[in-house]
Length: 405
Image 1 (cartoon, rainbow, N blue to C red):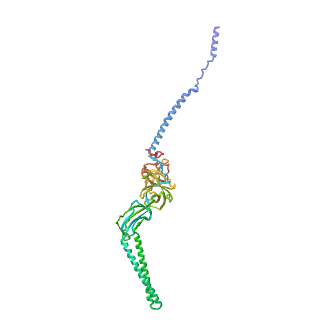
Image 2: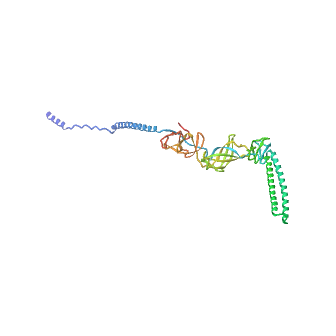
Image 3: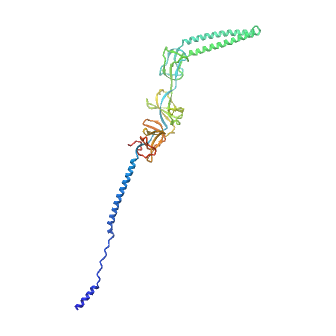
C-alpha cells in the first residue's frame, strides 16, 4: 500500500503548474525627474546661447552708437513779441534852423542867450548899420532928384504937345520930349525901388525869431562885425530849435520794412527816465532800402510840450508793429556761415539737417531768427564746419533751452 501511494503523489506533483511571476511596470510619476532634468538642461543651453547672442548684438549696437557723434543741442526761445521791435535812435527838433543877419554892420545888442525860450516874432538882437543908413539917405536924395527931373520933363512935354497942335514945332521934337518924359518916369521908379530896398535892408537891423522854440546856440556878441550878402561868408548869430515836438529817425531792419507803416505806435525810453516812457507815432518812411545797411529809414514824431525830451538825446524806440513776423532767438554759436548762405544744423530723426535762415536783430550772444526755423526743433550747438546735411548724430540737450554737456 505504501508502494502504490508514492507514484500517485509523484503524479499529482507533476500535474501541479507552478504560479507565474507578476510583470514589473513603471508609474508615470517616475518620468517627472527625467523631464525636469531635460528641461533644465535645455534652458541652460538656451540661456547660454541667448546671452552670447545678446552680448554680440549689444556689442555691435554699442559699436554703431560709438561711431555716431554726440552733439549738444538747444532749442529756440520765443523772442520778444514781434509786434514790438526795439531800435536805437536820436531825438531831433521838429524844426531846427540857424539865424543869420540880412544886413551888414555891428551887433549893437543881443537879448537872448542859450536855453532861452522865445516866441515867434520876439526880438533877438539889434544890428547897427551906419553904411546902410548912409546909402538910404543917398537913395532918397536920388529919388528927389529923379522926381524933380520928371516934373520938368512932364511940363516940357505938355508944352510941346500944345505947340504941335498949331504946327509951331515939329513932330520929331515933340516925340523927343515925350520920350524924355517916359525916361524920367522910369528913373523915378528905379530910384523909388532902391529906396524901398534899402529901407527893407535897414529893417533887418532887428533880428526876430521866426517861430517858437529854444535858443540852442549864440555865436556873436556886442560889437561883433556882421557880414551879410552872397559875396562874403555869413556867420550864424543864433540857432533856434522847436522842441515842442521832436523827430526821431530810426533804421528799421529790412525784415520789418513791410510792417513799418505810417501810423504804427511807438514808445520811447531813456536812461535818464528809467521808470517813464513817451508815446509817439511812426509818421513816415523813406520808402527805400539802404543798399549798404539793408535798413529802412523811418521817422517817429513825439509830442514834447513840457520840453522834458532834449534834442540830440539817445533813446530806444519801441515800435509797435503789426504781427506779421514770427521770430525766435537762438545762441550765436549755433550759426554756420556757408558759401550758400547762413545756416543752422537741426536734428531731425537722428540726422543733422542744415537749414537756411534769415536773422533779424543781433543781440551779441544771441540772434533773432525771423524765418526758416521752428521753435520746437533742436539745434546743434557749436556745429563742426565739416558737418554735412543728413549725417547721423545723437542729440544731448534739454527742452528748456539749456545745454547739457
